[in-house]
Amino acid sequence: MRTGVFLFGGVEMPDAGAGAPAPTDRRYSAKECWDATERILDMGVLSDKLGFDSFWLTEHHFQHEGYEVVPNGLMLGSILAERTERIRIGMMFNVIGMWHPLRMAEDFATMHNISGGRGVLGIGRGTVPREQENFGSKIGSFDNPDKAEADDFNRKQFAEATSVLRMALDQERFSFKGDVYEFPAAGIPDRGGFVEELTLIPRPLHPYEMWQAITSPPTLEQVPRNGWGGVMWLKHYEFMKHYWDRFAEIYNETHGAELGVGEKRTLVVNTCVADSREEAIASVRNGHDEFWKFLGPYGWSKGYMGEGGKPAEAGLIPTLEESLENKVWLVGTADDVAEQIQWYSDYLGGIENLVLFPAMPGDSYNKVDDQLHRIAEGVLPQLT
Image (cartoon, rainbow, N blue to C red; front, top):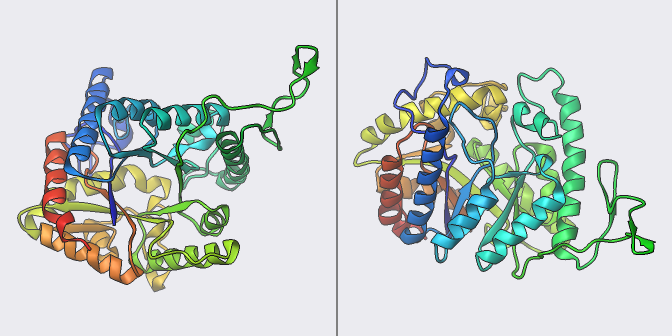
């Protein structure tokens, strides 16, 4: 079982929890945001020393609220590559529609090569209209009245951008013409002729893995057909089982190859470890509530189970007890958390890739440091 660490990478918030202040009322200084960035790098170095297999950041922009302060994980990943020895470095996720796909390919190849082949290409469609609209894309959200139209454009743009990305990374020469992108652009004169194809410089010198977030049924149907891995998070355990098994079915049907146990799938679970279950619940509650106060309005809780076994209504703000019942949060002693992870492995028929989310919004980095030690030293040795 390969194990990784996933951090939002936010500012420390002593007043995290349910109630005031509202997320949009938070505002942090440039120095506070940069101090958090430096501490994120410290956590990556620590994760490497503790023996985790991978370290994942997330891409977000314009978040004066301080929840996620890393806009370019590839740049930060290159810095981290120079400070670490073995850990793989990825993004959950690079928001493809907000990148020029050729710049994305160049930057990933650079980070991947400078790390000696430790880069992991994580891709997603995005979440936040504030970010998407200002970088030339669109996204639907719970509070967006035009979400269906926005999502239609996003899916088309995403499909074309990922096609360009793979061609640029994998082919010595390429060209592409779609509804959104055309490379090379038509009619570019060059030394008596016209540019008809492009070659990416640099290209990856090492094999690389590509993973996409799977949050909806349409994405579940598409990712295994594309042949890359799927990352699944924030789902009731029964929904997770359905996604897990359906992914394998589609992959096998499309590619004519039987996936191994847990192959091409990553399970992400939120964790908190303490000396007792009661202490862990008390320790994680405020961060859990801040997490959902921030992300609930974007519809992130739609993977929870609602009435009648159906998905929860968009906009749900779950309680910690609901998150524990859904098995989205695994909380307790090191033995408790190891037992819950082993339960998931048995339930899903085996896990090859496990990523843990051990830092809630607002947590101090001293606490994150402590959590990483508790997981590495108390939980991971028990996993099979």
